Amino acid sequence: TMASKKKIVVTGFEPFAEHTVNSSWVAVQLDHDPELNKCKKLRLVIHIAQSCGLKGLSLCAHCCVENGPDCIKSILDMDTICKRVNDAGIGITVSTSEDAGRYLCDYTYYTSLHLGKGRAAFVHVPPLAKPYSGKDLGRALQAVIQEMLKLLEGILLQCVHNKNQ
Image (cartoon, rainbow, N blue to C red; front, side, top):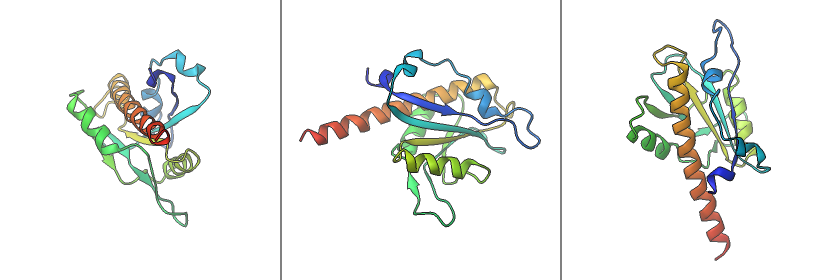
């Protein structure tokens, strides 16, 4: 399928400040399809970061940086992704956010959106055991990524269709 031919990059962050373990790094230690590594063309970059105070996963729809050009939006409709994942009943709430954060998050997401022409996503996860395990976060993250790839496939098919008209 088209989805299995996409190369995606999923990043997590290392521990910082008082956090000896960063839940984003634990969550990205997922089983992945080794076929993705054979693809030459990058389709999507997904950054995962830890954010305290969350009750579930938070998907950021766009990013703005101070003194930078206008906000850059992801080509992915984060509201649709949230609805699909929440409707699947995975046991972890997924919501959208208007703010990627201040640490390295804004810079990382903005740069990826700019260089990738909107083919980027940013997801915040809560700290481990507050209340989810790394396995729970990984499972939720897999569901989110699958929905992102489905939407991306639809976008790419639409582009091909429009080009052929």
